[in-house]
Length: 286
Ligand SMILES: [Zn+2]
Ligand SMILES: [Zn+2]
Image (cartoon, rainbow, N blue to C red; front, side):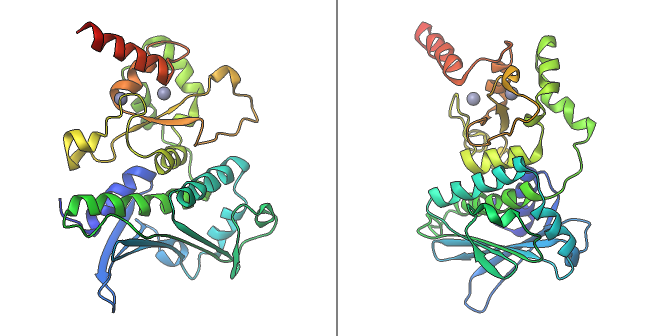
């Protein structure tokens, strides 16, 4: 698989649930860059995500359009759950050794500073930079995965704050495929697994490998299946009250389609450890 802007746009779109188009080029220093923008929207009123690929490093920039004030404004009034998701993604990036630079109304701000939510944002900048990265080693697919991963993380952080339309009903069927009748009601209640922003956040935080069997779909099926993973909400529905705030780090885990279907064979769902024990017993028996 070659590394081009189209495939990058396709992969990041699939991950964050927002349709993006891509362009690419090379800057004066010979660094390759990619730009992703929301498809079908005037870029001046939305934003661009620019990824610059340096020597063993990737820098991803969020750049709002010149007339994106309304959008930026809306982002500053995202609800508490969205803010938590935004912060959790940025914290994951820092934990992974990236530099995160957040600029609000022209001033660099600490994302953990709670006062940033107390005023209206007129301008917003976000840069996530990761050095010491295992890229430029000659394997285009490895490079692609790393570039996609860091681009998706920034995109997921932005999407967490965007005012999005509620999910289409058609998408619901995806979640209930392969589930026993009894689980359907529970899945309906558990909207957290369907929320695209939660999905993007969970993958940005946990990566693509299944938490039960450690399968990475891309590793087994190749590039066609890269990034193919489902997100499971581990907190029992009975513990979710009306004011419940999802924490993508502790509440959501990536599961391969097989393991995801399997955990939902019981209500409440099997835990990761329970399903792992079942697999272990099976392996011993064979
Ligand atoms: Zn699995
Ligand atoms: Zn689930």
